[in-house]
View 1 (tube, rainbow, N blue to C red):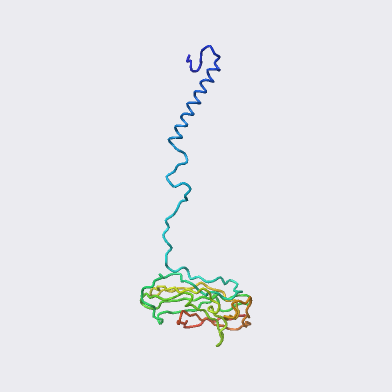
View 2 (view 1 turned 180 degrees about the vertical axis):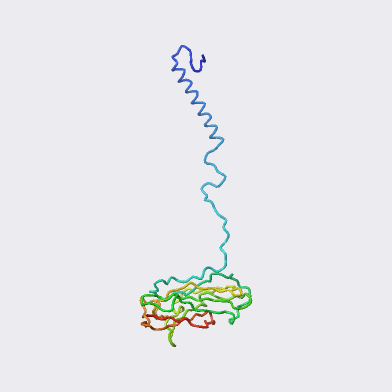
Length: 228
């Protein structure tokens, strides 16, 4: 029978088992130390304490979406009517658009509004020419105007802040449309921009017209609306 499993000698078997356990633990400790020296836990191929980085390309320089200042409630003076357009490359090169090739159209979400409804107003810009051209469609150039008869009641320019210039290339036949902004049915003027409230315009079936402009270009037709 093996003396490993059945130790013999003058001492009790338990003594030999304890000795063998001590030797075994010593061997295990030596192996662990060797593994730690070889593996070196905690080391890595990267710099310690550095976060992963990405090499995302720089943002495209093309114009962002045609945005508007928040105007859902339009209780404050109107801000910028529009900013940059949704498409068309921004460029300083190219042929300037002939004003005769640019068609503007005023856009309303409906023709008649209940007393609690706010008209949603926008514009479209179309290159009706046969070739691509460049036009400044920044908010400094765009204007929305509400009038009735010969009287102007509201303009997006009255309280505009931080206007921008943005050269945009319109391809032949391309149409851009601005997001809608809400008119709060009040009379605007540069003197009322800091006012907490402005005078409401007459309603009860009164008819108004929305006209839109880009620089010296004017929409051929005004869009009518009735305020009840």
